Length: 435
Image (tube, rainbow, N blue to C red; front, side):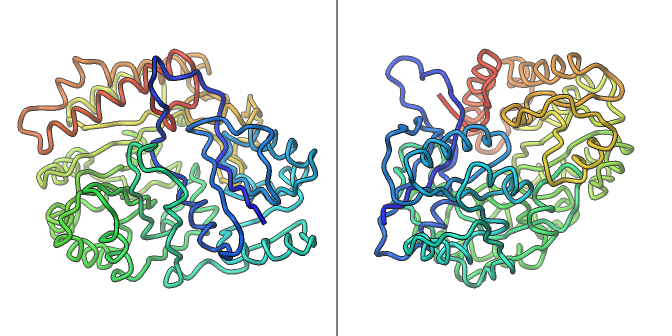
């Protein structure tokens, strides 16, 4: 069979001049599915963050991964293929949360991690006997983790083409987060030797570890960082703020090549952190950031606006904090009640959801009624925070000359500035696409 694996996107303005559109990361999830597909089948991977899929694309089977913001586009594509008699399988976090909704647009849906059930899906499709529902009964044992089919994308199409997944899940249970609902608060990791072998095989010097929390198991993380050091690669990943408690962990990360960490700081309010279940951040955040910075590790801090204890002063207070502690990067998201999360259930019961167009669930748009400000004021404040943080005065203030990897950090901020201002002009999904 000819199998088409699709990463859906949004309609976006064409890049300026002769530039080609670039994605941030390649769709590693689809490359893993391709690796689970018997080699007798021809697999093609299509990433709509690079270019829109032509509606006349032919295939014997189409698999589409669905995140909430891309659900409307995924459903349109699925409807188009099915109208031509081509069977469509939908999977991903949104589908796992709302399988009945997805089934209205698909011949089959996959609930949960797809790697174990995908070979059965393909076999059933080959015989013309697709079932409507495939449920992953067990979580994937990461000792059986397949090597992704990186031959299915071009490295030059991505800002960071070399990506590796080491762990899955997160031990925390934040009310707004889809990770804990999808993975069930499990935390699994691959054998360190397997990770080192894969990283060693990758070209180039920079790798992104696309984990939700690479430091959740301290002893595992320490062993991994020790083994990374001889490879002389530079890498970045995502971890939790409690990494600052362990000086040895930070030292090993730094000498092991860590450029920076994406850390969910979420809020400066203890009441907000308690409410959303992010108690791990109930520490002296400034001190924790200083400890991480002392080891030359950059921080991209993620903040959420619109939490129940946020009033209209939250935007200036948060920006002032981010500049004071000299965060090298930041993301300012709108609280978003994604299906399948505790937050969604709470807001549904309280009748606070204002907008049910999944295409607006981009974490950049307000889709619910805040408690202490209007929805319009929340939207204005989020946009102001993005614009202000990536203004030239803010960049100069945050990136002092003594910063490690200063030129790389300047490049990151300038590219981020271009992305942010592009988003503010077009109100597109923003973070996924780089002009």
